[in-house]
Image (cartoon, rainbow, N blue to C red; front, side, top):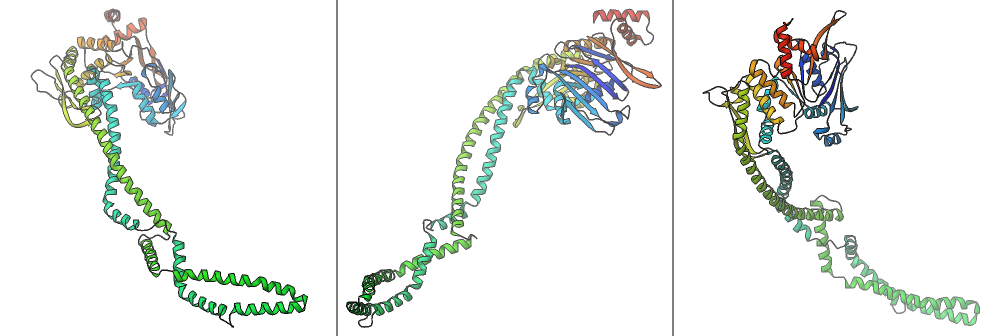
Length: 552
């Protein structure tokens, strides 16, 4: 609910302040006094685009402030999601500088214009002539039908289920694409994996290379070992035989001269070491005697295969090749996992789709059952507003697939005059007929759900007499469920107001301003009389005004 609207420096307005009531607020005034300007000012704090040309004093900025009681609207999540401070009495402020720069605030927190617009849609519904296009809007049509058919909660359940379904469907499509990409290369990858699986990944390939080098040196090493054997063991010429002779000679010298004893002992000790050295060399040489040339061939084949695979897959080390092998193995496992996951998702999607089909069928059935009653109620109120021969049809058409409204499309057909065939409302209804149909639909909606405050800009234009009285009565009844603000030229509507504001022009220092004031008592009587008869009103007009106010 709008509690207070304050406007400064906007078009004809220098300063204007309105304190609205919860019920029906009527705004009157002669043509050109600034009533529409005031509504445009309200639009600024609801996120509408600003025009710097509307700045009255080029040295000051436009400021519009609105205080709203947002308690009934359940907007706590909206405020939390947009990092705004939720307050029962929320202040919205909009500023437009002379340079055209615009700033907006909600409870002193700066907000972007799109956020302000989203919030504004939840707080105020400004109904103007162009809003008749809402009748062509699928959201509005189904919101009306489901409110009237008491299927709004069912549709909410359906929409949530559809959201889950679409989320799963998106994941299923993503996995299917991944699986398709893997499947396309699976045959080639299978060959590559089979080729790489022939490699013994437990081998230490550095040791293999070292072992092959031994084969390369085998013949030369064995030749040299044979020569060593000759030099070591040849009788009379061998190293061992000669060293024994040297040891014996040293022993003889030591027996003659004790000074040689230490040298003789060293020679004695060296002989076993020399013998052990020979046996160790002989053992080392045995390795080369026992080496199998067929093993060399086998190792060379394995190493060559490894090198060939490294070249083929453009890697530089066996470790890189192994990493590639393990990666492709993982991809193969992923393909298997993807197959399992896509099958599980497919099963879940089938179950969700079955539930959606059932819910959509229930929605369709309950809507269809309610349509006859909704048509009768709509036609009844249209007749009260001067369209007695109008007939309206809400026609459900089946869709091939789901959308957030179920599995239905909705046409609204109107036959505005007796004997006329039905046609889509945008083609068969005049502007005035559309306006009255919109009023009836919002009137019926107000009795079914909690709506934001609604502002009508001359919804009663072009009517008079009993139809005007019925329109005023409808606005009054709407105001029992919601706040209604209406700009009007009709006394029948003006007298129904719980609060009456008059917009008028004043002149100060040769400058024309638009002002507003709340009128009561005799001032309101005179305003109604002038609306009945013009200026100055006659005594009979004044008496008639008093009579209307007592009835209103």
